[in-house]
Image (cartoon, rainbow, N blue to C red):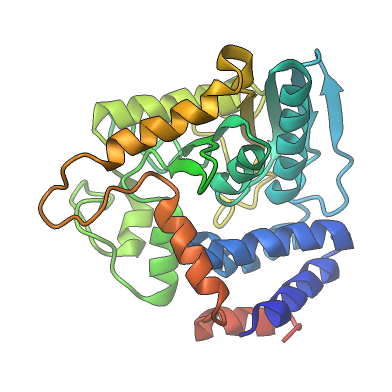
Length: 335
């Protein structure tokens, strides 16, 4: 489907579900960009879920987002159960503004929801020549190291830095694969990779349904578990959001709003090294790229390069939508 037609249809779906035109455009753009960067687990496959939560009054389509300035650098936002795309868009804009004024921005957001890919927000800060960290917590999916029950979310960590060319953006969940990929595989009847999840009896499974009923495995064992815990503290405890396994699953738990927390940290690199920063970051990247290549590698890529290449490639093509997702869109009475 042509991107312009698809964008128009997704905007209409959100408008039908009582979002403003501006908020509908923000949501549509983020979902379609997820498709374009190859992150289909965070794209149109989630559209039905967002609409269901709006219908059940668990996402507020007309939020009154409250922005509380604590200092010139620090802002606390009450998202009023907004859809996550909108509250995070407001939050990163505020973090950028703070950093431009004082050299650093710290923005915490509470009472939000799933906001898609963290890299979306990192890109906005990097375009303004800022270093950025993005954190968000998520529903239980990982068992803490030493436990046999899921408690932490896949709690991604995102870091971005300007390079003068393609942004350096590391966006990684603290699980071996993100939960969205497992849900997407389950929806399309596909298998998941071996060794990324356990079923509820504790055995490794490649069945996505059994994985969703069990627990996912963290990156790097106890280290990944510790990182997931760190994100739960930063995004949940610090911002006043749900934490400790209380964040609601957007697909399965309709007992109340998610109350997801986000934390954005933006830094103007000029505060330490002035204009010399860009020269040094380029030198740093070149040092790594000039290293001898391991067998089977023609180049050394930094985080963000592959995704950028895929995005540019997919921009030239129509977006392929699985029949099952097209059917879901049909059921929303738009197509």
